[in-house]
Image (cartoon, rainbow, N blue to C red; front, side, top):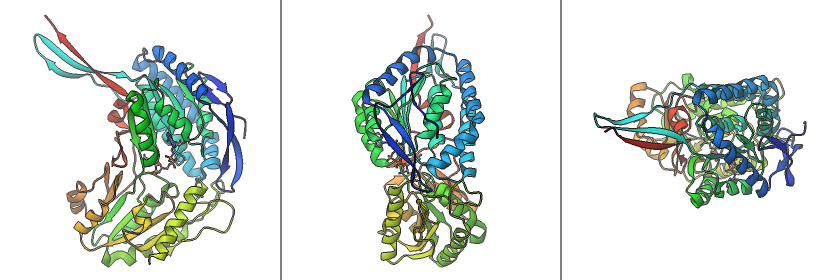
Amino acid sequence: MNKLWMTINGANAEGDLSPISVLNPADETVIYEAPQASIEQLDLAVEGAVNAFKTWSALSQAERDVYINKIADTIEENAEQLANIIVNEQGKPLQLAHMEVGGAVAWTRYATNIDIPVEVYQETDDKRIEGRRKPIGVVGSITPWNWPLMIAIWHIIPALRMGNTVISKPSELTPINTLHLGELLQDVLPAGVFSVVCGDGKIGQAMSEHKKINKIVFTGSTLSGQRIMKSAANNLKRLTLELGGNDAAVILPDANLSKLAEAIFNTAFINMGQTCAAIKRIYVHQSQHDQLCELLAEIADKNIVGSGLSADTTFGPVQNKNQLEKVISLVEDAKSHGATIYAGGNRLDTPGYFYPPTIVGNANHGMRIVDEEQFGPVVPIIRYTDVDDAIQQANSLEVGLGGSIWGDLDSAMQLASKLDCGTVWINGHAEILPHVPFGGCKMSGFGVEFGLEGLLENSLLQVTNINKN
Ligand code: NAD
C-alpha cells in the first residue's frame, strides 16, 4: 500500500508518535503502519481549523455547496481505490464496500439539497423575532471501524455544510481510507477546513477535552461515549453521540415466516452483523420458534465465508480479534446455558477472523448473547408468550437505538410506539437514509444525524429580536 500521511492544515504530516500497525482481518497480516499524532500535532490541526473557520464560515451556502459537490466528485472518481482499501482494512466483501463508497457519495450530495430555514417566531407591526442558524466552530469527528468511510462522511459533510471546520479521527483499526480521503481533499478544500489526525482513544480523548474544539460528533461504544461526555464538560462542547445498540425485532404471532425470513436474516447480518442498527435480538411467538430458527439456519448455511476480495464470498471476516473473541465468548456462554445452535457456532479453522453466520435458538435473557451487544455474525432467537411479553422483553435493556415489528401491518402500527428506541421499522430493519433523522435513546446516545434535524445539530440557534420602530 502506498504511503499515506495525516492531513494537518492542508498539508501532509508524518506522525510524531510511533506508527500503529493496521491488520487485514482476512489473513491477520500487517498491511499498513499508520501515522500516529501527538497532542502538539492535534493542537496544530486545531489552530489551522480555527483560522480556516473565519473564511469558511463566511461563505454562502451556495459557495460551500460547490466545494461539497467537488468532494462527492472526488470520492466518485476514486471509488475503486477507496472500496479496495475498505475491503483490505475492514474485511467486508467488495460489493458491500462499493455500496459503502456509493453511500458516501449519496450522503455528500444530499447535504447540498437541504434548505436551512429562518424561523419567524413573531411578525407584527412593531416587531419581528426570528431564529437563524450559525456554525458552531471547530467540529471533531471520532469514528468506529465498521463502516469507516461512510460514518466519517456522515460526520464531516453536515458539519462542513453548516460552515464549521472539521478534524477527523478515524478508528486506529481502520484509518487508511480516512487518511486517503484527507489527502484527496487537500486538492479540493482550503487549508485547515478539513484535517485528519490518527491515533487511538488517547487522541480521541484529547479532542474531547480540547478547549478550541466546539463540538464532538462520535459514533462508537457507549463506554467511549460516556468518557467523551465527561471530557467534553471542559468547555461545554456540543455533542452528538451515536452509541451501541442491541436492537430487538418482534415477529408478531402468525407472521408468514417463509415470506419474512430472508429480510430478517439480511438485516441481522448486514456487514457481518457489525452494524449499529442491525437486528441483534429476535423475539418470536413460542409456537413459531423452531420454524424461524430452521428458516434462518437454511439461509445462513448458504453463505460463502471468505476473503472480501474473492468473487464468491458473500460473508467476510469479523473486523478485529477483540470483536471475534467477544462473539466466541457470547456463543460459548449461550451453549453452556442450554441454547441451541441451528447454524454456525464455531470459528473457522483458518487464518483470518472468520466466523460463520450463527443462529442461536432457545436463547433467554440472562444469557450474555441476549443482554450484551454482540456486534458480530450471530443472532439469538427468544420465545415470547404474548405480544405484551415480547414488548416488555424488548424494552428491558438499557439501550434503545432501533427496533422493528414484523407481520400484520395494522397490529404492527398499533405497537410501534411501545418500543423504546429512536427508530421503529415495520416489516424491515436497519434502513438508514440521508433524508431521515437517525439516532438513539437511553444508553444508545442522543442527538440525530441526517435530514434537516441532523444538519442543524451542527449549528447554533441565534435569535434576533427586532423592534421596528
Ligand atoms: P469504540 O468506542 O471502541 O471506538 C470508537 C472510536 O472512539 C475509535 O476511533 C476510538 O479510537 C475512539 N475512542 C476510544 N476511546 C475513546 C475515548 N476515551 N475518548 C475519545 N475517543 C475514544 O467503538 P468501536 O469498537 O470502534 O465500535 C463499535 C461500537 O460502536 C459498537 O458498540 C457499536 O454499536 C457502536 N456503533 C454505533 C453506531 C451508531 O450509529 N449508533 C454506529 C456504528 C457503531
